Image (cartoon, rainbow, N blue to C red):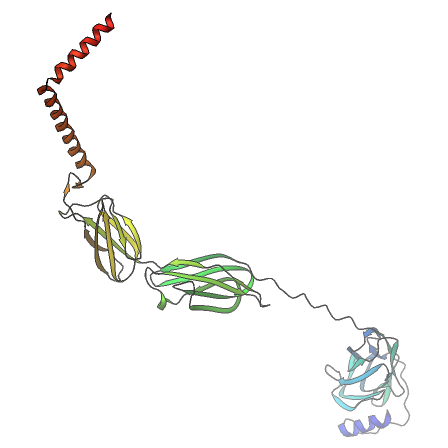
Length: 397
């Protein structure tokens, strides 16, 4: 150590005199030791061993640590001085079973301090290996030996732990539930649903079950919400849609086909006869939108009409009337009129069942009168009475 420390002191210009040839070991208790001093190390793993000095209450300004290690058991990987109590490095070598560390400091240090850290890798899976201090290992102050090495470290080598078993691959698709359409208006619609695990979001939609439009999100969530493009929504239109969700393992789930109707334009169709009387109970069909029956005010109401020219067909007691109305895209209710043909008498069109009863009764009265007149003129009535009297006398006998 004398030659190394001398060079160190000359280079650093920390002392003005050379180290004496002869030095003596101080009586102060202390140690240069390794931490940890033992342990079980798996083959192939790396581990650190710290070189430390306990000055035993004295102060030191230089330290030399010489070590040996079994090359058949350990690979030397390097030296680190992070956190060392010594700031000046005079020697730092390792390999081939030998490690040498020579350090100093401008001011003396004391206590239990870190010298440096050695990194090894275990080469074997059995047996033991010892890292030992060799001669020349000491801590000095102004060339006087304060502490000498007093320990070593022995490690036991073991088989590496088996690698963790891979988790079984997820083969279960997400479960889709709670499907609903929200934010529904004449120009908006939002599709919402939930899945039992995090998954992406896809909605296929369009005017038929062949869809044609898609909206999606790659974010993996359990609560899903996608807005449909309002440019392709038409007031009163019916749309098909289905949902797809895929989890992080690539498992896909697809819902059944669903439909929804965009809120349409509200219109009222008032049905009257040719004299302007309201007609209750008339069947009103509105193009492909649907049908309704007029109320006591003669009005059939639709809340899902669409903008443009629509055909109105009115059916009432065998009479049919049709016309074309033009519906505008606006919020307020739009009113239209339609007429049925025929003259209303006593609340109904001529030819209804009430008028037919009157005619039938009249015809029956006429027939009875004609039959009575015939019997009277032909004497048939007297003959009939005489026959009845004769029958009564026979019954009395």
